[in-house]
Image (tube, rainbow, N blue to C red; front, side, top):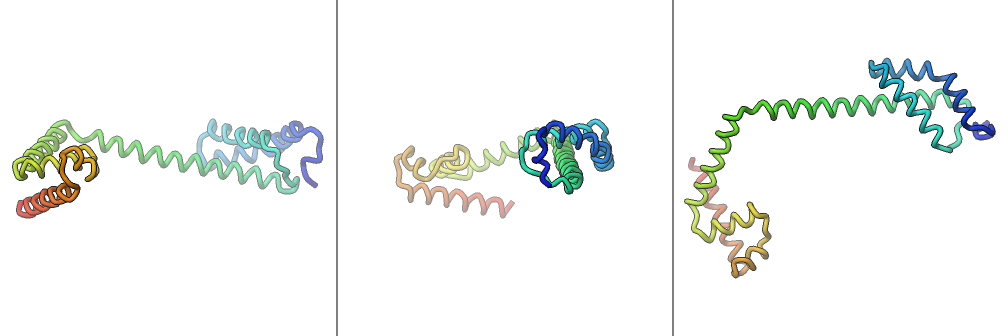
Length: 169
């Protein structure tokens, strides 16, 4: 018999709440080890049941409610793991000392200056427009008033020079 045959859905859900709350709460506590969060999950399951008008078989309501609690708990545990990973990554990121950051910044600056010294002005300009400013070959060609083939050749020469220099150092 479908539950929806009863006239008052709210009374039915209230009865189900009284009948199954303890088992649902116990399951959530076992999985989450947090009483308040367990109560919230059980209440959320019943709130969704109130909002949803899908028919339920009376014989399977208990199993459905416990499965719903289990699934909600698994979602919470997944979210906790994601939060924990994010916190660990943030802590690792914050552990980089200011002197290390300054050293890295100095290396980048030296590399940037090395690139500028290595290349002819046209190649340097093309590589900066492409990688720093994110312009396409066509946009660079229009800006410099040259062909796209020329832009490609300048970029290719600049990258070849960089590869050769980085290999030898």
